[in-house]
Image 1 (tube, rainbow, N blue to C red):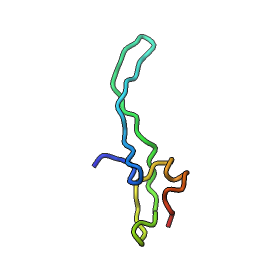
Image 2: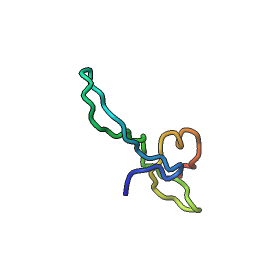
Image 3: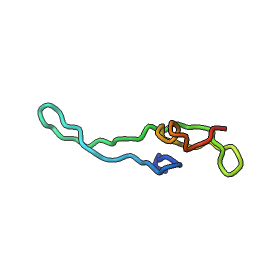
Image 4: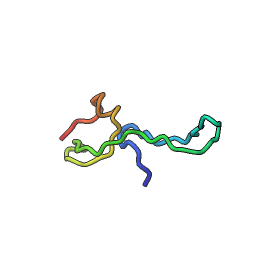
Length: 62
C-alpha cells in the first residue's frame, strides 16, 4: 500500500533534483503524514493523516 492521507487522499508526486551542474535525477515529494488516533465511524482508529488535515481540523482526535 502506498502511503497516502486517508482523509484527503494526498499522495506523493514525482519530480526532479537538479544540481548546479544541471545533472537531473528523479526524486519523490512525499506528503507530511502522521499516524494519529482519530474518531472514525463511532470508534477510535489509527489512520495516516497529512498535517494539513490535522491542522485544519478535518479529523477529530480520539
